[in-house]
Length: 126
Image (tube, rainbow, N blue to C red):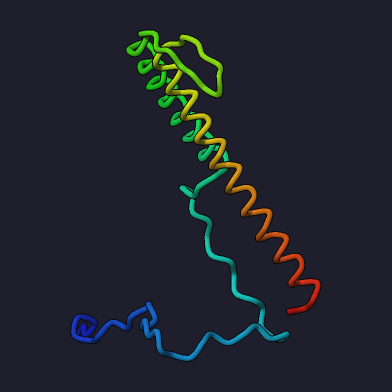
């Protein structure tokens, strides 16, 4: 008896990857639909994203605390006739918060405008 298994080519179990080939046939009533792909056990979840957000938020708070503790000298602030003395860190944080609020207002108005336009265009059917 001669063993010829070492000289025979082994057929590949993976299909060739030809991107220009015909699309996969659609499921017909006779054939069951293809099984969904296996779920990745390391997939992104809401809990994981929330946890990363909490960690980033805590790091930003620590950096803000360091900023406030290092910039305690008092400065005079005047705005539209009102004036007063506050620490430099508080003045800069208030300016940053005002900038974030202005940006959020502008972004919210743009989102509202786009949604209104989309709603109107779907009503007209165009």
